[in-house]
Image (cartoon, rainbow, N blue to C red; front, side, top):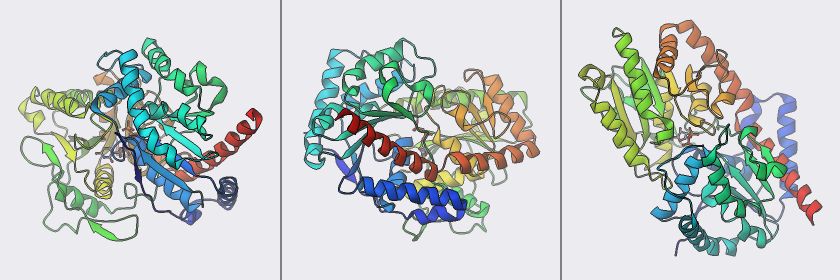
Amino acid sequence: MLKPFEVHVQASSLERFRPGLTGPEWEALQASAEQARERMAGRTFWNVNSTARGGGVAELLPRMLAYARGAGVDTRWMVVQGTPAFFHVTKRLHHALHGSRGDGSPLGAAERACYEEVLRDNAEELLVLVRPGDVVLLHDPQTAGLAPTFAAAGAHVVWRCHIGSDTPDAEVERAWAFLAPDLTAARLAVFTRAAYVPPLLADRSVVIPPSIDIFAVKNQPMTPEVARAILGHTGLVELAPDAPEPVFTRMDGVPARVSRGADIVRLGSAPAPGSPLVVQVSRWDPLKDPAGVLRGFALLLRESPGLRAELVLAGPSVTSVADDPEAAATLEAVIAAWHEQPHFLRQRVHLACLPMVDPEENAAIVNALQRHASVVVQKSLREGFGLTITEAMWKARPVVASAVGGLQDQVRHEVDGLLVRDPGDPAEFAAAVRRLLDDAVLAARLGAQAHEHVRTHFTAARHLTDFMALLEELDARAEREA
Ligand code: UDP
């Protein structure tokens, strides 16, 4: 019997946002919080996903929950559990929704039976908790199959899809055919971009892009010295003898220290504190194309052997992300691609698995890495919305991202970063990285504009306001349908 588990999240006051907002923006946020509180009085807002750590959804949920709770809405988070076979099916669906074949395995009756069985087990426990009138927000294909059960129990079901494809193809159709019977039970669906909305949900979809929490450990201010100290203690950069303590502040306000090291594949020593770093932080997923980043960087160094830059590909430890069964194989493939490189290149490319035991410590390491980077890249082949690029932009880092999916909304080419038109072209990628490494004035200008773009479009304050409007829409539809 598979039982979902709850992740408890402490409330955070919305007051935090006040200094960063204009008077009218602050008043609008407060007004919508007030409305949401009244609307949800006596009701619970459930979030259901399939991993508590690793990946964008697990990053987003605790912070959004904290503020929703801070606004006085009873918001809770349940994580369903699955079998390896279930996560194999859901990862296949994930690929298909992105228009990718993944491992090409079938999505037929046997897969459907496995998917339903796991969710049926999980639903039993959840049904005890969810009451009529509650709102249930199901995240991604892993939980879509719960929609009919909750709708039948009288809850208002919303399905949020964090992935998608701009150009639907046979794979995308396959995924929708698999999910369609369940999705008819969702009253609303939420997508990151309008292009991801399939015809079957066209009459009940809203577009809400994700956000980052600028107050989270991952994005909190950090001096360059402390960033270097944290990277020094984790083994990602050479530790300077006079380094300060590798400290950060936990969400509860208590100071803490980074003490765990990263698992690193490299030849020779860690980069010197002054070496410019090109960094990609991602789950070990073929669609993040870590091997492509390595090849693009290899091309860059072959063409410019005098360049001092080094590459860090960082991701979570491979066993830590419950719903991502591909991590170990993807990392192995990157290590194999690394082995194929000449000696001088292997000395300049570092493959790092970051410790995930303590999520706040992991966030502090990612924060340090993004701040220390000279260029942050996200060379994804497909991307729903790449939180990592927005995190780097908040830190005023110059970024290079593929012009795919949500990344095209996050980065405006030549305005607040550089977009690479063909994600499969290592030469275009290498040239973009080279430009930012060579031109400090351009890098600083793009970085400053990137920070501003995130402040105005991608913070949790905007995201919360969108969700409060969604609750209103949900109730209006429920009334019309009653
Ligand atoms: N992340 C992390 N530690 C890691 C690798 C990734 O905390 O070792 C975080 C990263 O900072 C970002 C999230 O995981 O917040 C990944 O979200 P994104 O939208 O970029 O990609 P997804 O994994 O959802 O496809």
